[in-house]
Every structure is written in C-alpha cells, then in structure tokens.
Amino acid sequence: MNDFNKKIKRNGSSLIRWEANTVSEIVLQILQNQSNGIVHSVFNNSFNLIFGDRMIHIGSVGNGVAPFGIGMEHMNAQLFTKQTSANLPVQWDSYNQLLIIANKHSLSLKQALRTNHKLSEQAFNTASIQRNLEWISSALRHQSWQTGLAQTAEEKEFIIDYLLSKKMTDANQSLFNKFDEVVFAMVNGQGLDDVKKVFDYWIGRGLGLTPSGDDLLTGICASLSILHGTSNHFHLLLRDYVKQYGLQRTTQVGYEYLFYAAQHEYHSHLVQLCSALLTQQESELSTVLEEMRAIGHTSGTDTIIGVLLGMSIAIR
Image 1: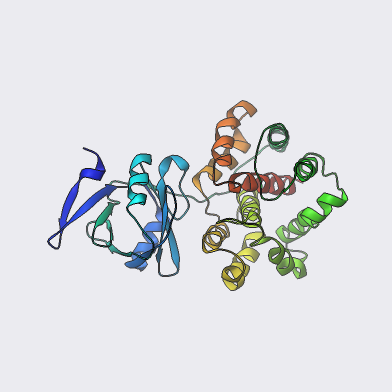
Image 2: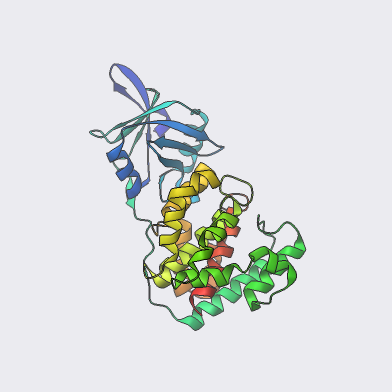
C-alpha cells in the first residue's frame, strides 16, 4: 500500500501517514530542542519547515539530502508537497517520532536512516587532485551548463581559463576580485582586515534561493574541510560573519547552507563529490558531477566552481 493511502488516528482525528527514508542527525538535534514549528516555504517537489531559528528541508532522497534535510521516496515527496502550504503549524511528537502538519499529515522518522553530513580531513595525492580538477574544468568548458557567476559565454570562458591556468584578465580580475589570494590568506590566518569586505562582496550575490556567491563559498568550504579539516581559519571567520550579518545579506535558505558549511556540514551530493575528487578516476567522477549539476538552476554548478577554486587554493 502506498504511504499516501495510509491513515493513523491521533487525538480522535485521522492523519495521512508518510514515511521518511533518511533524516540527518542535525534535524533530530533541532527537533530535540524545539517541538513546534511552521511550514516556511513550498516548492514543486519539496518544502521547508522552521523550528525556532532553524530550517528543516523535506524532499526527494533521489535529489540528495541537505545537512538539515529529510529525504522521502520521490513520488511520495511530490504528493506530500502538493498537499502542503506555507504557514501551516507543525508539531514534533518525540514519543512516536512523528512530524504532525496541521493535524492532517504525519511524517514518520522512526524507520529513517540517520545520515551524517560532516566532511572531515582525508589524505590526498596532489597530482591526482590536480588531474581531476583539470578534467572537470575542461568538461565544464565543453558541456552546456548554467552558472549565476557568468552571465555570458565570454564570462564562462574567463572562469574556465582562470581555473585551468590562473590566467588573470581584466574580466576575471573583476569577477573574482582577487578572491583566491584573500581566501589563501584567510586559510592561513592572514589578511584578516579583508574578511568582511570579501564576505560582503560574495554573500547574497546573485539570484535564487541560494545566491551564486553563497554557493561559491559553500563549495570552497567543502574543499577546505576535506583537505585541511579544522586546521584553517576560513570556517571560523565565516561562522562569525554569518552569525552577525548572515540574515541581513542573503536569503533564509542561503543562510542555512552557509551556517552549516561553516561547521563542515554539507549537502550529501557535495560530500560525495569532494570524496570522489580525492579518490576516483576521471570516468568515475561523471556520475557525482552530474548529480551536483542537477541541484537547482545554477546552484550545483556554482558550488562545483567553488570546490574547484577552493581545492586549487588548498593544494598550493
């Protein structure tokens, strides 16, 4: 029987019961601290909840899981989303491990696989990473891809040239705003006077639920997490900035991803991509690369560019 047809009784009322396939450990921590929330925003195939000052994303597990996410079977995620609307009340029933929406729907987390989204430092071979970075950069050059960082085909070429050869032109000089030099300094605890200027420039830059500048920074954070672990200052500086200025600079969703990126927690597809860049051959990267590119309209590609830029900085 499909989950859509299952009903349970709660306080004398019938609830349509849904089942979660996965739930991040962060979501369980959020629910442990806050039992009442609301539906924040609804999209085509997914929706967000707000509990206190923290967001929870519910969507198809096939699209990957956010660090603050719950994953469902794809068809069920679509059906559930279509019956949900913003501002509905949500309650957490800790005893039965149920999220109750408007006393009409329940989402069970009891059987859901618990997922960990933290990226930790791993051993790596610089030559292998460099080879994979060049392969992905070349693939992006020859394939059709959308990025909020480039508005024209010419700007796209500037980005690829920069990633492949660090060739500096007037165009990509303006685009990156000497970004990698400043990031390199921040990773090593230098150039701290430029921190706010850099984050002011990139955070909230671009359109969409997660602006392109946010995605770029998230990708950089992920690459630094897996290559340097906690032994860099970039995450600490970003954490302080986001806490103080984040909601003034970007969207609620963008803020959430940056909040967790500063704590080395990432979307499951991003975790897989970074691990693949360290361990796999070119042909094996194709699957995880395509999964990343499918995230949002430009978010996946913007994040990939951040990963490439961050890794090229980190392996100097």
